[in-house]
Image 1 (cartoon, rainbow, N blue to C red):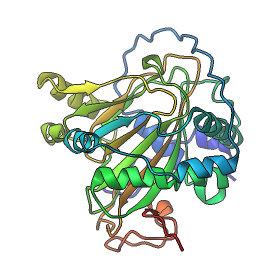
Image 2 (image 1 turned 90 degrees about the vertical axis):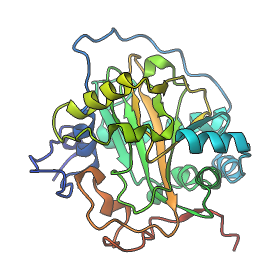
Image 3 (image 1 turned 30 degrees about the vertical axis):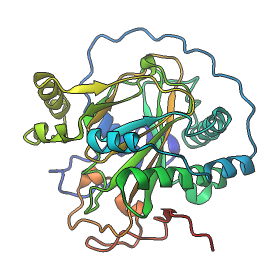
Image 4 (image 1 turned 45 degrees about the vertical axis):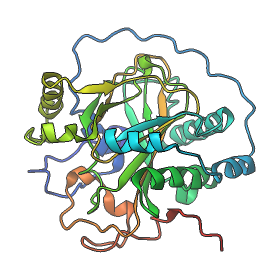
Length: 331
């Protein structure tokens, strides 16, 4: 029987090419993917993160109430997203709601991996997915009408469904996340896909916040860079093309309650976590209602059938685990 400790140390099989389906678990996928990042041999020393701020922690009912309310977007913000493929929005969550989320995520990570992400750092990138079906509190964050409404408004679509949730913990000392876009991660026949990235603590530059290349169409510059399932060639290749063409990169801290939204064609990365605190985030991906699964998902899509059970290639992506998050059914 496989244990959580085995998950941390799992290795991928030597697949012949990326056209083959992924045959391991989600943690193994992240172990593989983070290993594609080009990291410098010399590592900066770990610094002490500022103490977490203190705020009143709301009840579960108060969380549900807050996240059921809509968030006003200005036309300028929507236009910025559509031009650049990302946007960072302040005060999407109140500070107490974020800190309550962090406590819950840390508890889940401890239970799954038998380590304290903040105290037993070992340079790893830990991940959990599909938590919402069995966790009532996380369900409020993942199926949040607020996040669903923002996603639908940014994409300009009438309704969005959930693809999956992802609990992400980049531990102290963990290296870069490679340059990538999410288009081939989600085996969907639409580009109306957006990920809400919710950092569960203030996230300074030293902690490795998500960084975004822009404008959106810079993905066309790297079409000729061949993706490789081993080594750091793809990450280095994208970086070199971006530098050669003077591509702008937004790498800025995240305030408590600030949330980013990035399009599936937006190229993004994250630096090494140089603090002694795990950079914990909840990442929820939403897509246009009516989208279908592509005909030939690859290993880069990971364990996609776990996220859309009983849905076959070519079929509408609308399983019981892909509920509509916006608009809200008032029945």
